[in-house]
Each structure stands twice: as structure tokens, then as C-alpha cells.
Image (cartoon, rainbow, N blue to C red; front, side, top):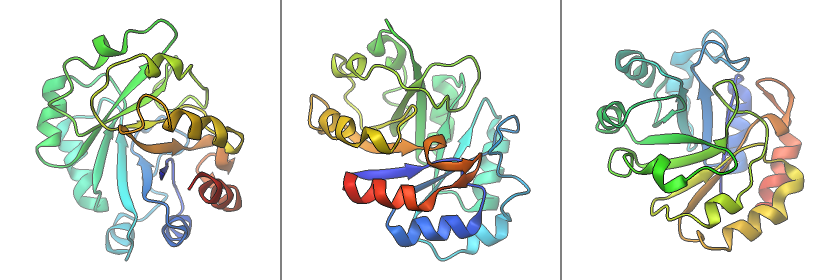
Length: 210
């Protein structure tokens, strides 16, 4: 199963993730996030780094030019839109770079209604826990909400996933959406402090998950 480690702020840790075989590394370009990557990783160094890992830029209600500028500066392979971006905006971005649209989920949500206008304007979905602020919450939501939904597009599962959730993740991946679950997205549960990853925990998680 593919893994995306989000909220990276140290280039040497990105190299370590790459060597570990992690498929996706996320970089947050939202200035209110404690994991804001600007001025923490040199864009030219990241762009020129010899890596197999896919670099994903995470944006929250940024304008189009800002997104595209960072894609170019950092050599990003994908964009993740974590705010209230419209279908029209998602389509404009996705015509230039593969795009993940994030949906924040809470109890009682109608998943089909949330995603109804985004099927043709994004490449992947990501389902995360609804929270009062933008960005990852570090909290879980009830995955049963997804099990009952018609999604019909590959998606990433996120929301407070930690090393103790391996069996639950495996069980979910074997369920109704076994053909659609694209990757597991992790962040704060694998940190020593915001933006600094616990590499041994990630290594253990990757080994037992895969």
C-alpha cells in the first residue's frame, strides 16, 4: 500500500523517506501552518534533488499563480488543494499538474454530495477529518462514512492515522473501496515536533503496512 508522508520541512528527511521507499512526500505552502515549508527547504535544492519520491505541494485557498510558481520553484509533481477551492479552480490547476482535492469529513456528511462536482476536475480525492482550521487535524473520523459511499475515484485516506492503526487500515483497504484506496496519508502522529519526522516510526509503519 502506498504511503504519503505530509508536512516535511527537512530535506535530509525527504531523502530518507525516498530511500525507505515511501511514494509521496507532502510540503505545506500554507503560511499559517507550523509545517510551512517556505524558508525551511531551499527550493532549488529540492527541485534538483535526485529522488524517486513524488513531491506534493499542499495549498489552502491559494491563487492560481501562487500554486504554479511553487510548482515550478520546488519541482512539484502534484498539487493537493486543502481549502474551499471551486471545481473551476481545480480544473484549471489539474490541466497543468495532477491534482488531489481534499474533503473534510464529519459525522453525518453526505459524501456523494460533497464530491459531486469534482469527479472530472481532479485526479485523486483525499478524505480528512473536518476541523475548525485548515490543514490536517491529527484527528480521526469514522471511516464507515466512506464505506457506505459511492466514490468512483482513487483516494487517499487521512485523518490522525498513527502506528497503532495498521490493522484498521488494512481492514478498511480490504473492504468496499479496495480498488479505490490509492494511498495512506500520515503526518502529525509520526513527528517529534511539527515538521520533524520520527523516521524509525515511519519505517516500522511502512514495513508492517506493506
